[in-house]
Amino acid sequence: MGSDFQTIPIIDIGPFLDKFNDPKMAEDEEVLKVVRKLDEACKEAGFFYLKGHNIPNSMIQEVKEVTRKFFDLPYHQKCKIKLSPESGYRGYQRIGENITKGIPDMHEAIDCYREIKPGAYGVLGTVLEGSNLWPDTPSNFKLLMEEYISLLTELSRKIMRGIALALGGEPEAFEGERAGDPFWVTRLIGYPGSTATDPEAQSSDVGCGAHTDYGLLTLVNQADDINALQVRNRSGEWISAPPIPGCFVCNIGDMLKIWSNGLYESTLHRVINNSRKYRVSVAYFYEPNFSARAEPFDFCVQKTGGTAKFEGAVYGEHLVNKVQTNFVM
Ligand SMILES: N=C(N)NCCCC[C@H](N)C(=O)O
Ligand SMILES: O=C(O)CCC(=O)C(=O)O
Ligand SMILES: [Fe+2]
Image (spheres, protein in one colour):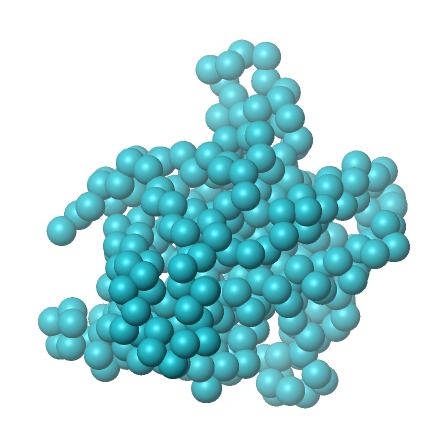
């Protein structure tokens, strides 16, 4: 097996989105081409660039601009929306406050989560209850982000239909109790530029340590001019995922790995900003229903030798475990 990808494929989702409302879409040759590309990308790399997504470029840029402006503010102003257990882990975290495998990450961020109605998911859900904390300038920050998140949610739901077909399942495989009522996470992230004088000594500062994402599908909107995101291939090499203007970088999360019985991998990735410039990225995570139990699909078990390779996992538990161990405060 062991595929050693050296680059990350680009997928034009346009032809798939064009046929989305066609009842016979699953038989359409253009649609099937996209589905095959999704399958290959998810199998080989667990990562792909997405183009033809119809998210307005002006919005993609504006989201990064307001994020950059926020991180430019003095620390005490950013702290007005500080994240804490009391805020449901929503809001601003300073550089080094988020940790990955015990090591502080050289990034600052605003974390936001889908609303959780009080008591909606019992004790587990209370950990993340609270309102998202949005900066008050520019005055359209909240509205812009809510619009962006809602567009990405709809887009992701469609991509997940493509991924369901790619796995060989029904297009609705992720609807209903799996991800019909999807949870989402959004992180607005800033990575300081390197100040190292010796170019050889630069890579010691890790913007975000090696990790996998938690849910189904991640869409990253990264700064257009800095190469910092790296993806680990099967032989352990770190492959760059440089920005391609207009494209999202997409990757698979832990729950999709489970549902697909390992047919698709949640690939390790990390961020190292060796440039002198401050790097902004906005990561949107499309997740299962908060209470969904991810268990290998029968049809995926059949395709992978007949044995389920993973125990079931409740998405909300996985998320809450991560969140509760991600911060030093
Ligand atoms: N919601 C998601 N996926 N966030 C990804 C953050 C990864 C870094 C985190 N400190 C960790 O160790 O998981
Ligand atoms: O900043 C990036 O490019 C990726 C961030 C990331 O991997 C994450 O937040 O999970
Ligand atoms: Fe990630």
